[in-house]
Image 1 (cartoon, each protein chain N blue to C red):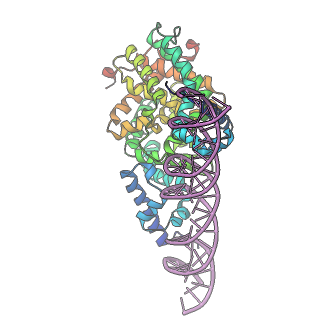
Image 2 (cartoon, chains in turn brown, yellow, red, purple):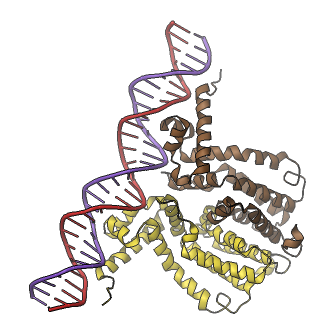
Length: 204
Length: 204
DNA sequence: TATTAACTGGACCAACGGTTCACTTAGAAG
DNA sequence: CTTCTAAGTGAACCGTTGGTCCAGTTAATA
C-alpha cells in the first residue's frame, strides 16, 4: 500500500504555510526568518526544513499554491484568457491577470527573491522556478504567434520580469496596479504593432 | 587647512575597489563577502566598513565609478546620446548605451542587488540609488517629451528595471547584449508609436 | 499490541554583515 | 628632526541567519 502523508505532517504543513503567509503580509521579507515562521506555526525549525527543503522551497510552495488558479484559467478557461482569442488579446488579458495576482503577493515575491539570493548554494536561477518558466513560455508563445519576426523569448522576459522589479513592486503595494497593467498593455500593444501605437484614449 | 584624504587611505581605497571588482568578475555575488574582499585587498574588514559604510556602500561606489562616463556623455556629449536629437532617437541611443554598460557589469549589478536585500536595515529601496534615479529621470523625461499621453514614469521603470532582472542578466553575461538592445529598442519604438511598429528589417 | 518508518524539534554549526577599540601612522606644526 | 594628533587600521567580537543532525516521538499498519 502506498504511503500517504501522515495526518500530523499534513496539519503541520498547513500551519507552516499559513504562518508564513501571515508574517509576509505584515513584515518585510528580511524580517521573516525561517525560525520565526516555525515559531509562529508552533513547530520546530527542523520540521520546516524537513518539509520544504530550504527557504526557497517554502516560498516556492506558497507561490505555486497561488499560481494554480491562474494557470488553470489560462489553459482551459474561457477567452480571452483561455484559448480561442487572438494572440494579442490573450497577451493583454494575461498581463492584466498576472499583474492582479502580483499585486496581491508583493511580499511573497520579494521574499522569494530574497531567499534565492541568500541561499547557500549559489546556483538557483529564476529559470529554475517552474511558475516563472511556465508563464514565460505562455507569454513568449503568444508574442511569437502574433509577431514571428520578433525576439519573443526576450520580450517575454522583459514583460514578465518587470513584476519582480522593486520599483514596480512598490507601486503594486501602493494600490497602483491599474497603472502597471495599463502601461504593460501599452508596451505589449506597441510591440505587436496593433493600430497606430498605444493611445490611452483609444485603448479603453 | 582642510584635511585631505591620507595617502595610505587613498591607496587602500583603490586596493579595495580593485579587489572587489576582480572578485566580482570571477565569482557569483553570494560568494564575494566583504571579508573576502578585504582579504584580497590586503586590509582588515574594519577598514572596508570604515571607508564604505556597508556592503551596499561599497557596491554603490563601484557603480558610481562606472556610471560617470555615461552620465557625462548623456548630459554634454554629442547627439544622439547627448542633447540635440529628437527624444525618440535619444531614448534608443541611451538604451543601447546602458545595455552595453550593464553587459560589462552584470556581476556588480547582481552584487548590488544582493547587498540591498541582505542588509540589516530593511529600508534600502532601489530608489535610494542615485544612479538608478538619475537614469530613470532621463528615460522618463524623454518618453514624456515624445508621448505626453503615456505614463512615462512607469514605462521608464519597466525599460530600465529590466536590466536588473536575472534572466536578462544571464543573457548579457552570455554575450547576447545585442539581442537585449534590439528588443529594448523594439519595445521603446513600439511604445512611442514610431512608424508601423517595430520591424527588425526596417530598424537596422 | 508490536513494529516501523515517517515525523519532530531543539541543540548545534559555519558564515555573514556589522561594531568596537586599542594601536599605528601620515603629515602639519614648531 | 621632533612633537603632536586625528585619521586610519584591523583583529577580535557580536547577534542573527540558513541549514544540519540525531535521539526521541508517534501515526499507521498488520
